[in-house]
Image 1 (cartoon, rainbow, N blue to C red):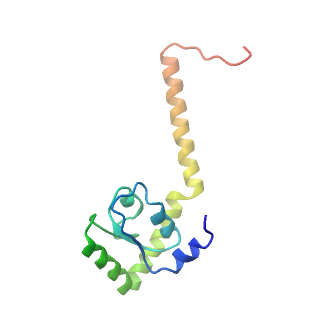
Image 2: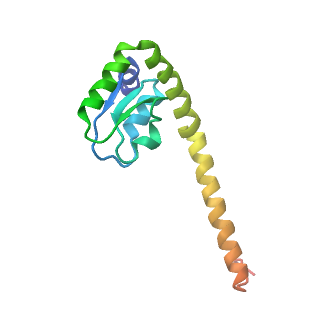
Image 3: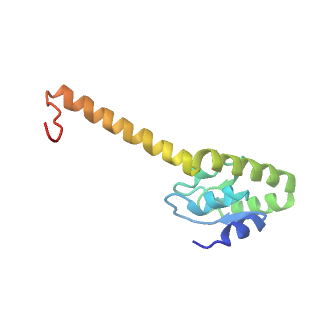
Length: 132
């Protein structure tokens, strides 16, 4: 990874994400975590990362005029952009920190294991342990 990216994201007034297709939106999440509001299209997984009107501004996919207006709105209204910056950073850290992701994986694994254990006991299988 490029160590200078956090500085680049932080120096920007707005992060523009004109993707027409996007599975997750990693770069949008990186921008938010650095306190940079996002202007982009509501494509793929972007709306799961960018909260329209709270952490950035989203336009319908392909609505270039809407994207242009979103960028201008953020640049011409620094107090609104600042509010989105603060909320974006808070939201990214709260929902996507390493600790939060680890907790979500642990919860997922626990649910899979408890479901598997429940299925095993319902089917009458007995659990075996090595060496018994």
